[in-house]
Length: 292
Image (cartoon, rainbow, N blue to C red; front, side, top):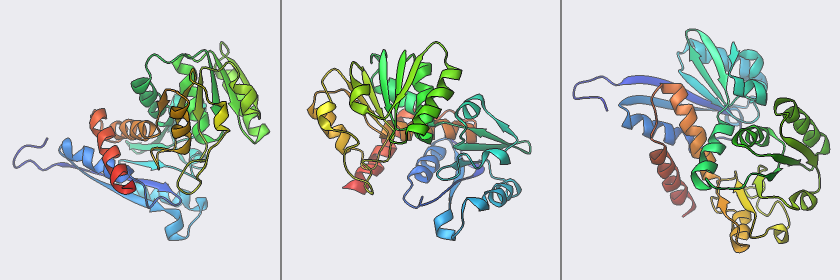
């Protein structure tokens, strides 16, 4: 914390995306910064509110450079479109072909991806002894891709990518196979078949969100010896998690990934080591207030 009479270091960061007005990320970053004696302002740059599209990205990135932003979080629909506008990519962002965090340093814009790290942080914290022999990933989009890389780095031996878009599932499986030749990676459009003999299920589609309620699969497919990891965190207690607990499954809620993403981005923006438990607790308090 800054001492008496000390002027706190000031940082300007932001989030670029569409439909982000309800994001809890600004509050997480600003509150954690306060504990470190930093004066951090987190600006929402909502394309929907301003009537802009992804075509506005070049101007927004350049404006952030000029205005002295320390960094930006990037979300839908800009995670891929931002890449050509950056000077450098981390190994993680390059492998995932997606950026969710941009750091401005010494005149350069550097792209990172904390999605996979955030998922892994929450998963290991919640289920450190989980079996990783065969895992099913439901959802081959941007979040699914990031989590797939993280899961394979954690030691998943066989990964089945399932998506209603067969071409997207096949493409992700092929990309992963090139990066992780020792793992057995396949794709499918049949979640029931994929779950046969699986140890775990990672759900990485929007189904279950407040705006898209419901289950992403038949609850009858859930069984006691299967762990279930969810990425949706609003609501925190999704229909999938309720069904999984009813079936006796060990579960990981989506709040852990949301907190993990923020933890990774905060350290990249500020150079300070965040208090992970404090950020996670703050997120859960905000979610409880919002859903109460």
